[in-house]
Image 1 (tube, rainbow, N blue to C red):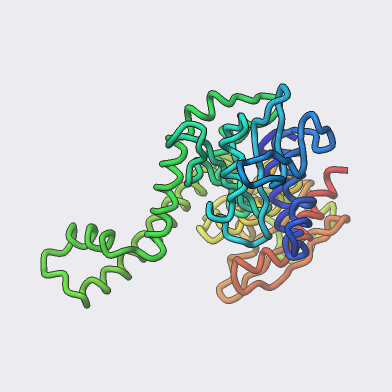
Image 2: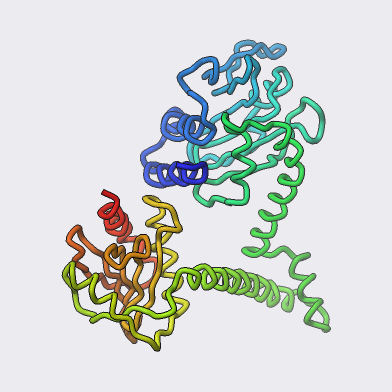
Length: 364
């Protein structure tokens, strides 16, 4: 697996196991050690690379420990402190990490609860850990733009100078993005006032301000959704053939599934709902294969999701053309389709294992 695939694999592991992880020690074993080995590429069982329960004398604080110290050339390069699963990561809860940063050669400190990783350096003052992270990785909501920078900390391409030089921009970009995300959910008065004065010339009374607070939040949500939809359409249409698939709507046996997809019709209209459903199926299937191997094809009666652009490798079908009811079709090892009634697109996740199983069928 390449670097991004390893991150995605660990994210899947966190999603699948987080409910069973209740203690800090369990989080270290299940999530943090795999992060050090799978993502950063260090041997957690080699004390020349990774020292657990790292100890250094810090003033009057004798014998304090940091959970992990990652070594390179006999020097500490990265310090990692772990907290309870689900805990919010605040600098006030990382006193050992803060003190150890100033008495070792480490330039990178990591505070984590197993799911979220905060990366710190010393941008504000030399040899003193910053109070705000320059990079935040959330395995539940991965920002893929950060992965090239994260990879610079891995063993095979360790490039401390490059990541330190990029850290200031990453720090402020991350803070701006998180602030904007917060404003889109619950806009502050200043944010509301800024937009209101652009479109409204009257007095901004308290009642009017509350009206615009709702409008700003709604407009932001719609704007993001529109941008996402445009990207989904662009991504999908690069994979769709010029002609679409047509097949009867009843359950088909294995050979019929393949042959019917060869008979392509025209006059097919792909809906936004189908595009969104396709992206959900693709996201589920990506736990098993690379995203580019998942392809969508629209038909008059259904939208097909297939592996390797091969009609003989059906993963799922979206039957969304009915006026009242919608179904997702899943396939067993014999390529027999079973339809499942769904009330909303979120119900697709209920059939995630069947989707993954279909992908695995064609990987053997």
